[in-house]
Length: 91
Image (cartoon, rainbow, N blue to C red; front, side, top):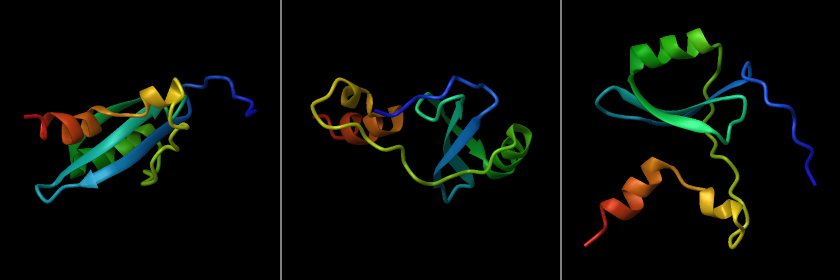
């Protein structure tokens, strides 16, 4: 069993999702815990300033998924994934 660390809002995380051809950057930003994030889209210059302001270095690796069939696995999705996998392919 993994011991969890106390919540610390001073720990900040930015996960780079995609640098788009139109100059926009898709990212996930979290305070305290990397699993609790918001999805953002910013122009590249504002993204770079945001990283400086938040004093973080972007990462590109995804969060580890929970085991299939567990209650936690039901929460392993993002709005971006829902849009790409469900809404665009719905009849």
